[in-house]
Image (cartoon, rainbow, N blue to C red; front, side):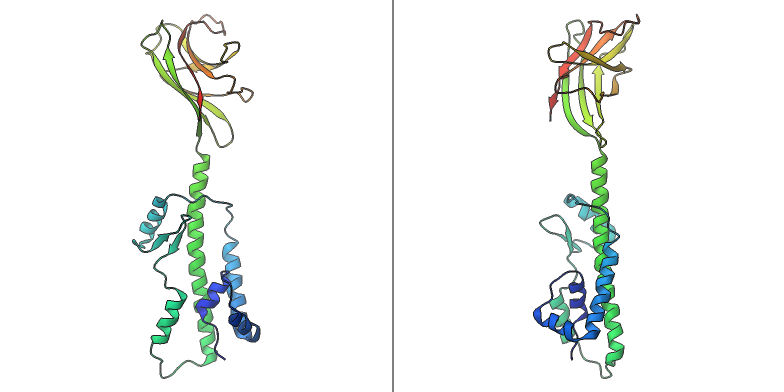
Length: 264
């Protein structure tokens, strides 16, 4: 009885449905059934090392970088609709069967007992090669996704306009949210160093009925954490004031620049 091709057994182990004829053969042939069981176990072991969850498909340049790194060339990895590559240079099962059919038959063929282990080793090598490729792709995608998720995301920004007493001043403010949910305001002010006192950054409600100090701006730029209890949909104004060194924690009334946050 002819046994199933090792490539077909490898593909079935990886999840490709078996035909009715192949399933009937597996039910009747203990040798092929055992070989398939070993290959399926290999697949389970390989997939058990993949622990990342749902992943986003990275841009094409990521796959191009993988292809360059592995020396696969232009045809080594071909993108599919979802952004995941396929082994463009790997022959299909049909091509393998045709190549084997066209190859000359050796005069002294191996005995069935010796051929079975060779076929099994070949199938396991195929499964390991495919599993290694999948593991590499998942690792790259997972790393790219995790890096992307840990980067702060901009959620609002404002152009800071000058007040009449500081006509040459200008600035910007950007609110970002970090991976842990913490928010911070990045302020950039072009006004020169204050000759006396210091500059302070504030969040103010639209009607100016309430305000909160974020801290002192030292130099032209600064990053300030936003208190967890501050609702930015209410505290929409970013203000930078000129403050005298008089020990009074309240706003001096001398605003240098101010702008309203626009949310992304």
